[in-house]
Length: 273
Length: 129
Image (cartoon, rainbow over all chains, first blue to last red):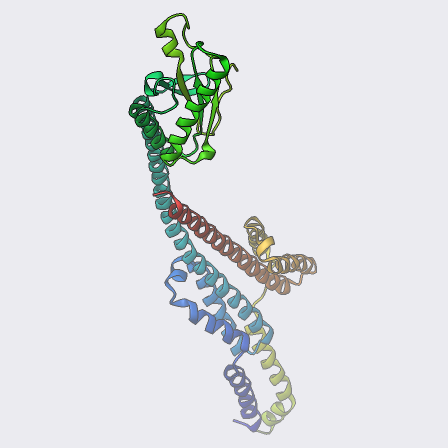
């Protein structure tokens, strides 16, 4: 071999060796990115095509680097890097997809639970409303209250008062006590206490007597713990008979105290309305 | 030996130049007109647009579209290597834009699910016993 050919061979070897040994930053980045995701099972499972392309382009970039083609090395390293990123994104998506499925299952279960709870609480509410209504009815039946246009009306007959007096007899006190219990339980209800008499005696006297009897009932309610703001009493005298004043029986029916119980909102229908 | 010596002396530099040219030519592949690559790049860009990459990866998608336009000019100029490379890069960018858009959409689905789970849980906790 001559000096010349030896020199030429050496130069070519040097060029190739220099290119091969000099790391290319873009290619190195693609290579290390590929190494990072290659053993990720999500990536392997969902991105085999992108992974293969990345690998193919890494190899191609290595060849170009060996051959000293800087532009081609950069080009194929760029492609390799892009497909590494595609594979990474597809792998990440697979992980997220699993979260979607897991969360969907959890949401399904929670929805069922919420619906069950809702129907349970609706049932419970309906049941307790029914129970309240039944209790109210039973209580009112015990009090012998009657449903009228003005609401529930409880009548305390003449026999429950001392003759010509406003004092409540023990039977009358028991009824008032029961009413007080009812009012304690149904806190939104209010009462209007009306005193009535028959037509015997002067109107003024009858008015006073009816007023005193109504007040007596009111005071008894307060004594049993009903807040005075919930009660009102009025004497109406002989104005509103419920029977004839011509017979003893009719007159006795007319002598009475009527207790009108409001609706749950505290409303009482007006007389004659 | 004298003749051979003079042959080497006169043709040495020419030989060296020839072998260097052969080296470069051997590594550089001949590039045909990238008809198929053009189609697959266009398909990749269309798929990325369809996956809403315009919202989630607008820079990548724009770059892919610009490279496609540039590649078409290069094809007209019969610069096939340049065109092929541009098309390859545009395809890779479009595929990356699409993958990113799909991943973002799935991530959003996870977030929405978690939020609705949180709402349900609160509703159940606050439900009357």
